[in-house]
Length: 127
Image (cartoon, rainbow, N blue to C red; front, side, top):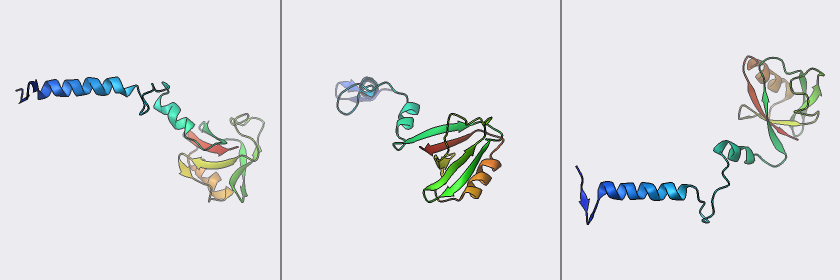
């Protein structure tokens, strides 16, 4: 069933609106085309300056963590750590799996990482 609205049916109007939205989808509010970045890339760029994401594999990480005034920090990295080259001594751990840990002490952060040892863990590190 088509419902008429003036000379244009509602279905035609909906099709026209859908085409218009599809055409505008690639443009920002300023009328310029988007950079073509995926939503994943956009999220990555939304990290605070000086921070990076680190994906930690399941198992032992081969690091120690110290409690500092700025939050839990990497205290030591073992020579065979899977995080070698990804983090540095002194880096602050900001989040674990999107959970803010800046208010936790080193022992609590180590417990969190150990509890999740059988799965990948996502850290945000302030360098």
